[in-house]
Image (cartoon, rainbow, N blue to C red; front, top):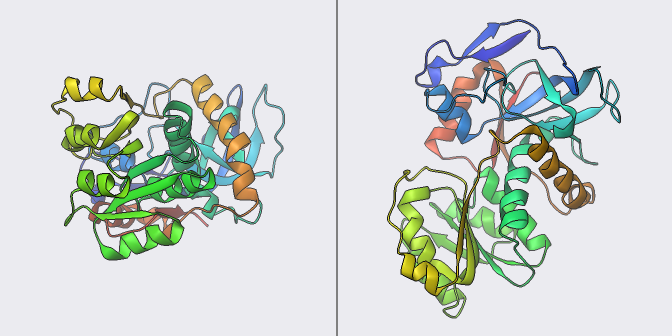
Length: 326
Protein backbone atom coordinates (compact mmCIF):
# COMPACT_ATOMS: atom_id res chain seq x y z
CA UNK A 1 0.00 0.00 0.00
CA UNK A 2 0.96 3.68 -0.12
CA UNK A 3 1.09 6.10 2.80
CA UNK A 4 2.41 9.54 3.63
CA UNK A 5 5.73 9.12 5.42
CA UNK A 6 7.96 11.67 7.14
CA UNK A 7 11.58 10.65 6.51
CA UNK A 8 12.82 13.82 8.22
CA UNK A 9 10.77 16.41 10.16
CA UNK A 10 10.32 19.75 8.45
CA UNK A 11 8.01 21.82 6.30
CA UNK A 12 5.19 20.52 4.10
CA UNK A 13 7.75 19.12 1.65
CA UNK A 14 8.74 16.61 4.36
CA UNK A 15 5.56 14.64 3.56
CA UNK A 16 6.37 11.85 1.09
CA UNK A 17 3.88 9.50 -0.62
CA UNK A 18 5.71 6.17 -0.26
CA UNK A 19 5.15 2.47 -0.74
CA UNK A 20 5.01 0.82 2.69
CA UNK A 21 4.08 -2.60 4.14
CA UNK A 22 0.36 -3.35 4.16
CA UNK A 23 -1.54 -2.61 7.36
CA UNK A 24 -2.91 -5.73 9.08
CA UNK A 25 -5.94 -6.05 11.34
CA UNK A 26 -5.00 -7.43 14.75
CA UNK A 27 -7.11 -8.70 17.63
CA UNK A 28 -10.18 -6.50 18.06
CA UNK A 29 -9.42 -4.48 14.92
CA UNK A 30 -10.78 -4.07 11.42
CA UNK A 31 -8.86 -3.13 8.30
CA UNK A 32 -10.30 -0.07 6.58
CA UNK A 33 -9.65 0.70 2.93
CA UNK A 34 -9.30 4.47 3.18
CA UNK A 35 -11.33 6.75 0.91
CA UNK A 36 -10.39 9.99 2.68
CA UNK A 37 -8.65 11.47 5.69
CA UNK A 38 -8.59 15.03 7.01
CA UNK A 39 -5.87 17.43 8.10
CA UNK A 40 -5.62 18.33 11.78
CA UNK A 41 -3.22 20.69 13.55
CA UNK A 42 -1.74 17.66 15.31
CA UNK A 43 -0.63 16.32 11.91
CA UNK A 44 1.33 19.51 11.32
CA UNK A 45 3.02 19.18 14.71
CA UNK A 46 3.92 15.55 13.91
CA UNK A 47 5.37 16.59 10.55
CA UNK A 48 7.49 19.20 12.34
CA UNK A 49 8.80 16.60 14.81
CA UNK A 50 6.93 17.89 17.86
CA UNK A 51 4.14 15.32 18.31
CA UNK A 52 5.12 11.69 17.94
CA UNK A 53 2.44 8.98 17.76
CA UNK A 54 1.73 7.13 21.02
CA UNK A 55 3.44 3.75 21.49
CA UNK A 56 2.01 1.07 19.22
CA UNK A 57 0.25 3.53 16.89
CA UNK A 58 0.89 3.83 13.17
CA UNK A 59 3.88 6.07 12.38
CA UNK A 60 1.98 7.79 9.57
CA UNK A 61 0.01 10.99 10.26
CA UNK A 62 -3.77 11.14 10.18
CA UNK A 63 -6.12 11.12 13.20
CA UNK A 64 -9.32 10.25 11.32
CA UNK A 65 -10.45 8.59 8.13
CA UNK A 66 -13.42 7.25 6.22
CA UNK A 67 -13.68 4.25 3.95
CA UNK A 68 -14.89 0.68 3.68
CA UNK A 69 -14.11 -2.32 5.83
CA UNK A 70 -11.82 -4.66 3.90
CA UNK A 71 -11.13 -7.23 6.62
CA UNK A 72 -12.45 -8.18 10.05
CA UNK A 73 -9.85 -9.10 12.65
CA UNK A 74 -10.20 -11.73 15.39
CA UNK A 75 -12.66 -10.96 18.17
CA UNK A 76 -14.69 -8.36 16.24
CA UNK A 77 -18.46 -8.54 15.92
CA UNK A 78 -21.13 -6.14 14.73
CA UNK A 79 -19.28 -5.08 11.57
CA UNK A 80 -19.04 -6.65 8.11
CA UNK A 81 -16.71 -6.44 5.14
CA UNK A 82 -17.96 -3.68 2.84
CA UNK A 83 -19.50 -1.52 5.59
CA UNK A 84 -18.94 2.19 5.00
CA UNK A 85 -17.39 3.70 8.12
CA UNK A 86 -15.43 6.57 9.56
CA UNK A 87 -12.95 6.19 12.38
CA UNK A 88 -11.06 7.96 15.13
CA UNK A 89 -7.36 7.07 14.92
CA UNK A 90 -4.15 7.43 16.90
CA UNK A 91 -2.38 7.70 13.54
CA UNK A 92 -2.26 6.18 10.08
CA UNK A 93 -5.09 8.00 8.33
CA UNK A 94 -2.82 9.33 5.56
CA UNK A 95 -2.67 5.91 3.90
CA UNK A 96 -4.55 3.60 1.56
CA UNK A 97 -5.32 1.20 4.43
CA UNK A 98 -5.37 1.46 8.20
CA UNK A 99 -6.07 -0.95 11.08
CA UNK A 100 -8.65 0.46 13.50
CA UNK A 101 -9.82 -0.78 16.93
CA UNK A 102 -13.47 -1.74 16.45
CA UNK A 103 -14.51 0.55 19.33
CA UNK A 104 -13.32 3.57 17.35
CA UNK A 105 -15.52 2.93 14.31
CA UNK A 106 -18.68 4.81 13.40
CA UNK A 107 -21.07 4.16 10.50
CA UNK A 108 -21.22 6.78 7.75
CA UNK A 109 -24.30 8.89 8.61
CA UNK A 110 -27.38 8.69 6.43
CA UNK A 111 -27.37 11.13 3.53
CA UNK A 112 -23.61 11.75 3.76
CA UNK A 113 -21.18 10.33 1.22
CA UNK A 114 -18.33 8.26 2.53
CA UNK A 115 -15.69 10.79 1.48
CA UNK A 116 -17.12 13.70 3.50
CA UNK A 117 -17.53 11.47 6.54
CA UNK A 118 -13.74 11.76 6.99
CA UNK A 119 -14.37 15.27 8.31
CA UNK A 120 -16.32 13.97 11.31
CA UNK A 121 -14.53 11.69 13.81
CA UNK A 122 -11.87 13.94 15.30
CA UNK A 123 -14.01 17.10 15.49
CA UNK A 124 -17.16 15.42 16.76
CA UNK A 125 -15.32 13.40 19.40
CA UNK A 126 -13.31 16.46 20.49
CA UNK A 127 -16.34 18.72 20.77
CA UNK A 128 -18.64 16.20 22.41
CA UNK A 129 -16.08 15.01 24.96
CA UNK A 130 -14.97 18.51 25.97
CA UNK A 131 -18.06 20.69 25.66
CA UNK A 132 -20.63 18.15 26.82
CA UNK A 133 -18.98 15.25 28.69
CA UNK A 134 -16.46 17.41 30.61
CA UNK A 135 -17.85 20.97 30.62
CA UNK A 136 -21.53 19.90 30.64
CA UNK A 137 -22.93 22.66 28.43
CA UNK A 138 -26.66 22.99 29.11
CA UNK A 139 -29.59 24.52 27.22
CA UNK A 140 -29.76 28.29 27.71
CA UNK A 141 -26.06 28.63 28.57
CA UNK A 142 -23.52 30.55 26.51
CA UNK A 143 -20.61 28.82 24.77
CA UNK A 144 -17.61 30.81 23.52
CA UNK A 145 -15.70 29.06 20.74
CA UNK A 146 -12.28 30.35 19.73
CA UNK A 147 -11.54 29.70 16.07
CA UNK A 148 -15.21 29.43 15.17
CA UNK A 149 -14.54 28.83 11.47
CA UNK A 150 -12.22 25.85 12.04
CA UNK A 151 -13.31 22.25 11.76
CA UNK A 152 -13.72 22.10 15.53
CA UNK A 153 -15.45 25.47 15.64
CA UNK A 154 -17.97 24.80 12.89
CA UNK A 155 -19.03 21.57 14.60
CA UNK A 156 -19.12 23.15 18.07
CA UNK A 157 -21.47 25.88 16.82
CA UNK A 158 -23.89 23.34 15.35
CA UNK A 159 -23.91 20.99 18.34
CA UNK A 160 -24.32 23.80 20.86
CA UNK A 161 -27.25 25.25 18.92
CA UNK A 162 -28.78 21.78 18.62
CA UNK A 163 -29.01 21.53 22.42
CA UNK A 164 -30.38 25.06 22.83
CA UNK A 165 -27.29 27.00 23.87
CA UNK A 166 -26.24 30.49 22.82
CA UNK A 167 -22.97 30.63 20.86
CA UNK A 168 -20.25 33.27 20.68
CA UNK A 169 -17.31 32.83 18.30
CA UNK A 170 -14.01 34.49 17.53
CA UNK A 171 -12.55 34.54 14.02
CA UNK A 172 -10.13 36.73 12.09
CA UNK A 173 -12.09 37.88 9.02
CA UNK A 174 -15.62 39.08 8.21
CA UNK A 175 -16.00 36.18 5.78
CA UNK A 176 -15.23 33.63 8.47
CA UNK A 177 -17.63 35.31 10.90
CA UNK A 178 -20.34 35.33 8.23
CA UNK A 179 -19.97 31.57 7.79
CA UNK A 180 -20.19 31.11 11.56
CA UNK A 181 -23.41 33.13 11.57
CA UNK A 182 -24.84 30.91 8.82
CA UNK A 183 -24.19 27.91 11.07
CA UNK A 184 -26.06 29.56 13.95
CA UNK A 185 -23.52 31.61 15.91
CA UNK A 186 -25.22 34.43 17.83
CA UNK A 187 -22.26 36.60 18.88
CA UNK A 188 -19.59 37.35 16.26
CA UNK A 189 -16.21 38.66 17.43
CA UNK A 190 -13.36 39.66 15.11
CA UNK A 191 -10.37 38.99 17.35
CA UNK A 192 -8.16 41.27 15.23
CA UNK A 193 -10.38 44.28 15.97
CA UNK A 194 -12.35 43.47 19.14
CA UNK A 195 -11.65 42.29 22.69
CA UNK A 196 -13.54 39.05 23.21
CA UNK A 197 -13.77 39.60 26.97
CA UNK A 198 -15.56 42.90 26.44
CA UNK A 199 -17.77 41.62 23.64
CA UNK A 200 -18.91 38.53 25.54
CA UNK A 201 -19.60 40.70 28.57
CA UNK A 202 -21.74 43.10 26.52
CA UNK A 203 -23.69 40.30 24.87
CA UNK A 204 -24.45 38.53 28.16
CA UNK A 205 -25.28 41.60 30.28
CA UNK A 206 -22.03 41.16 32.15
CA UNK A 207 -22.57 37.51 33.01
CA UNK A 208 -19.86 36.02 30.79
CA UNK A 209 -19.56 32.68 29.02
CA UNK A 210 -20.63 29.52 30.83
CA UNK A 211 -18.31 27.36 28.75
CA UNK A 212 -15.26 28.33 26.65
CA UNK A 213 -13.69 25.98 24.11
CA UNK A 214 -10.12 27.19 23.64
CA UNK A 215 -7.50 26.19 21.08
CA UNK A 216 -4.98 28.91 22.00
CA UNK A 217 -3.69 27.89 25.41
CA UNK A 218 -1.29 30.27 27.17
CA UNK A 219 -2.00 33.41 25.12
CA UNK A 220 -5.69 33.45 26.10
CA UNK A 221 -5.51 31.88 29.56
CA UNK A 222 -5.96 34.99 31.72
CA UNK A 223 -8.49 36.61 29.37
CA UNK A 224 -10.49 33.38 29.14
CA UNK A 225 -10.82 33.26 32.91
CA UNK A 226 -11.95 36.91 32.89
CA UNK A 227 -14.55 36.05 30.24
CA UNK A 228 -16.02 33.16 32.25
CA UNK A 229 -19.32 33.41 34.07
CA UNK A 230 -19.72 32.39 37.70
CA UNK A 231 -19.48 28.58 37.75
CA UNK A 232 -17.98 28.77 34.24
CA UNK A 233 -15.91 26.01 32.66
CA UNK A 234 -12.85 26.53 30.45
CA UNK A 235 -11.94 23.58 28.20
CA UNK A 236 -8.45 23.85 26.69
CA UNK A 237 -7.79 21.68 23.64
CA UNK A 238 -4.84 23.38 21.94
CA UNK A 239 -1.62 25.32 22.39
CA UNK A 240 -1.50 27.52 19.30
CA UNK A 241 -0.81 30.49 21.58
CA UNK A 242 1.90 28.86 23.67
CA UNK A 243 2.23 26.47 26.59
CA UNK A 244 2.99 28.66 29.63
CA UNK A 245 0.72 31.42 30.92
CA UNK A 246 -0.11 33.25 34.14
CA UNK A 247 -3.33 32.51 35.97
CA UNK A 248 -5.01 34.72 38.57
CA UNK A 249 -6.20 32.13 41.08
CA UNK A 250 -8.22 34.75 42.95
CA UNK A 251 -10.33 35.40 39.85
CA UNK A 252 -10.82 31.68 39.33
CA UNK A 253 -11.85 31.20 42.97
CA UNK A 254 -14.16 34.20 42.89
CA UNK A 255 -15.99 32.74 39.93
CA UNK A 256 -15.98 29.19 41.32
CA UNK A 257 -14.78 28.27 37.85
CA UNK A 258 -13.07 25.16 36.50
CA UNK A 259 -10.34 24.58 33.91
CA UNK A 260 -9.87 21.31 32.05
CA UNK A 261 -7.30 20.35 29.44
CA UNK A 262 -7.64 17.25 27.30
CA UNK A 263 -6.36 15.52 24.19
CA UNK A 264 -7.72 12.52 22.33
CA UNK A 265 -4.75 10.90 20.65
CA UNK A 266 -2.95 9.47 23.66
CA UNK A 267 -6.04 8.20 25.49
CA UNK A 268 -6.29 4.43 26.04
CA UNK A 269 -8.52 2.57 23.57
CA UNK A 270 -11.19 2.02 26.24
CA UNK A 271 -11.53 5.76 26.83
CA UNK A 272 -11.70 6.47 23.10
CA UNK A 273 -14.32 3.75 22.71
CA UNK A 274 -16.43 5.34 25.46
CA UNK A 275 -16.29 8.72 23.71
CA UNK A 276 -17.13 7.16 20.34
CA UNK A 277 -20.07 5.32 21.91
CA UNK A 278 -21.39 8.57 23.41
CA UNK A 279 -21.00 10.32 20.06
CA UNK A 280 -22.89 7.55 18.30
CA UNK A 281 -25.71 7.80 20.85
CA UNK A 282 -26.05 11.57 21.03
CA UNK A 283 -24.60 13.06 17.83
CA UNK A 284 -25.23 10.47 15.13
CA UNK A 285 -29.04 10.88 15.26
CA UNK A 286 -28.54 14.60 14.53
CA UNK A 287 -26.33 13.73 11.56
CA UNK A 288 -28.71 11.04 10.31
CA UNK A 289 -31.56 13.56 10.43
CA UNK A 290 -29.52 16.22 8.61
CA UNK A 291 -29.68 18.69 11.51
CA UNK A 292 -25.89 19.06 11.53
CA UNK A 293 -23.28 18.50 8.82
CA UNK A 294 -19.49 18.60 8.52
CA UNK A 295 -18.13 21.73 6.87
CA UNK A 296 -15.55 20.90 4.18
CA UNK A 297 -13.37 23.63 2.69
CA UNK A 298 -11.77 21.56 -0.07
CA UNK A 299 -10.54 18.13 -1.16
CA UNK A 300 -6.99 17.41 -2.31
CA UNK A 301 -5.27 14.18 -3.39
CA UNK A 302 -3.67 12.39 -0.45
CA UNK A 303 -0.47 12.09 -2.45
CA UNK A 304 -0.33 15.92 -2.34
CA UNK A 305 -0.68 16.17 1.43
CA UNK A 306 1.97 18.90 1.39
CA UNK A 307 -0.44 21.26 -0.41
CA UNK A 308 -3.16 20.49 2.15
CA UNK A 309 -0.80 21.28 5.02
CA UNK A 310 0.06 24.62 3.43
CA UNK A 311 -3.64 25.49 3.22
CA UNK A 312 -4.19 24.72 6.90
CA UNK A 313 -1.04 26.53 8.03
CA UNK A 314 -2.09 29.66 6.14
CA UNK A 315 -5.45 29.56 8.04
CA UNK A 316 -7.47 30.76 5.08
CA UNK A 317 -9.78 27.76 5.10
CA UNK A 318 -13.21 27.32 6.69
CA UNK A 319 -14.01 23.89 8.11
CA UNK A 320 -12.00 20.83 7.18
CA UNK A 321 -9.46 20.11 4.45
CA UNK A 322 -9.81 16.54 3.15
CA UNK A 323 -7.21 14.22 1.64
CA UNK A 324 -8.75 11.72 -0.78
CA UNK A 325 -7.32 8.49 -2.13
CA UNK A 326 -10.05 7.79 -4.71
